[in-house]
Length: 217
Image (cartoon, rainbow, N blue to C red; front, side):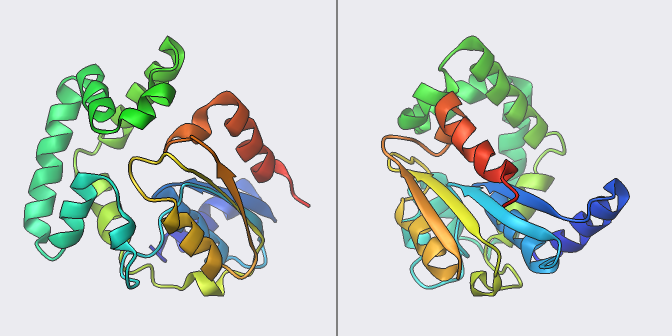
């Protein structure tokens, strides 16, 4: 995970960004924190939505809700098996993305109100999952394995962090983002009652989240 910071430094240099904010959702949360860790003088602020905490910390994987993630946590040392399972999942998803999204909703009923809110939002999620599997299992597998050993501690992040999480999350318990926020030295938590893991996409919460990202103060 920590290597992501150097990659983003190259991108920031290319774009000519002297200072900026970073944001991440779910497994993207550690990626955003890795950027902040690598560039403490350039990253001004971090905004996180439903972020995961380091899976190698005691008790963190017990905060997982989604059955598939619980299984991966138990079998994480069997990397070939996990990669094979992710490959089969990617193959099935790419074959029929709309059906894959329907299966996601079946597994996570509290996410249905966000994913299926309207045709435009459903299309957004279909495209999101399609792009996520564009390299078949590679991206999902690498990100999942990197959730255990970040290569840095949340306690080393000095920038202000605005953290948002829902109380009806079908993937992680609200305890996980609360735990992560307690480890970040300068974190402010915002609880969204009734929101699921993907609830930050809904208009009102999206406006609040993006507002936190855009605020450079």
